[in-house]
Length: 221
Image 1 (cartoon, rainbow, N blue to C red):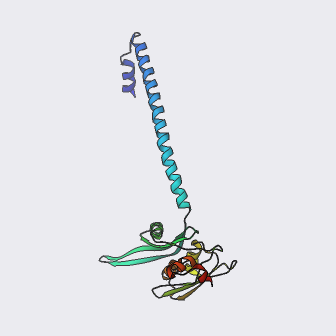
Image 2 (image 1 turned 180 degrees about the vertical axis):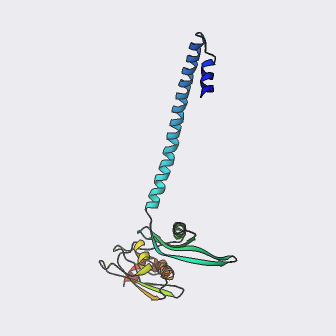
Image 3 (image 1 turned 135 degrees about the vertical axis):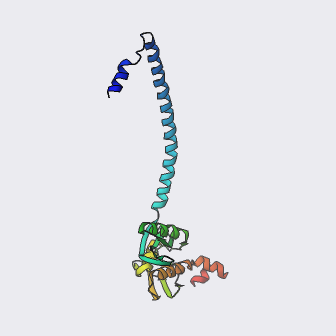
């Protein structure tokens, strides 16, 4: 502190003639700095506004999808040095408007496994034809491994008569009146994938008539 005070006291003091010039230079620096700051602020506002709109659009797209974790299990893999522990998450993703997907993710932590499961589910989406009563048009059967799932349409007010992972898939697909029965294995992943196959095999009456080469009236008769 002593050396600093000495330097300040013994430093060269500007003459009276040099003071106005120094003051003018400081004023010019303030003016230039203020103008540059305003310009940079405008540029930041413009750029930030564009990024803000993109972020809002991304959030709106993400808000359309709902995610439900069906199962989280701790799994192990035998390697040369022993066993490597990780987590496996089964996640169902849907927008309740006819699109649903089942994904599986593995990671060293639960959050990473769920994040991977959501990304995998969005890669395997299935479009489900819905009727006016939020049901399915026809009966359908799906199979995956040892699991078999039967789904059939139901009258308005019936609700979702299903259980386990099958119920989660049907609800996130937007189906509100349906009857489902699990046949065979009780494994959540196999049942969820079997339900996905059953929904993927659904066809509307118009599509069925076009495939068979007949009129729509003949389908209903």
